[in-house]
Image (spheres, rainbow, N blue to C red):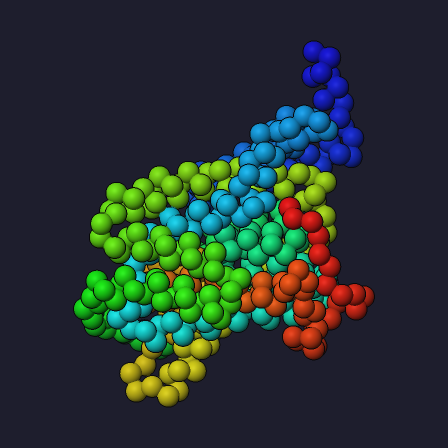
Length: 401
């Protein structure tokens, strides 16, 4: 009873009020997971974990000399990027590159839809040191594992807010993307039909593709090798034809299990003192900005191509170039059906969505290459001269985690 009384008293302090706010945030995440079915495998453990770590003297996190289970999990799975990379194996096993291999020009949209990342890097560097700005910018890819790896490798002090923003915007794809797409397209453009001409992609091509992509990406952005390599290894499990049981395990059991651990472990960075800062709100805003401009970049690129093509593209498919697979591809397909019940864009939009998965990982590797070289970092002002933090301070590095 004495412990209960002391903990209740703590709730009436400033720190206690912050904890109560975090309980509400955790409750909202749980509500979105259960009631709205927004990424429940991630948001449910994240919401529950947020409540766990914001209890007075919580034993779930390390307090003084007493180690907490979630802190141990964080050190074992996120501080060394292990959980995100293992999750990439499962994601790779889920992806069918057939639509992209049938129509290679869809790869262009994946690159175009990363525009928001580099635009946000410039904007974020006005408010944050360059290392943190680079970590925040990658939120626009709507790729949680890549955001974690980049922020962790660069040692950003805002890792918790970045992780939450990246996964939140993945879950909010159905809410954020449709208004942006409709704003940038006319009804006539949304009615454009794109017949799907399936090409026969040989098994040899499917097997060679993940190997070649890994080699090419590694030559372009060496820092992306672990990211793209784990993703492509998962796809190789799917396509090789001799490891079907492992492929199925990676897609279901492994991906779900790691996602649960990832969600509840991320909560260690949702402690009130770390999370309730004005910088957190700014990061969420910049992440939204990046996400919107990534969507816009893909749509506008499709509209640009239509100026030179006889067979017009439905510009909505460009929005699927972000990494939120397969949610973004499905949203575009659904929007096409709403405009015309006979307009089936699924194979095209999923093809673009798959290319976005690859492009976002390569973009993350490029960000790492810019800011990590021989243990040092590049100043973003040298890469984008118009972008400089007001302090003109050189890029800072923080200890991992």
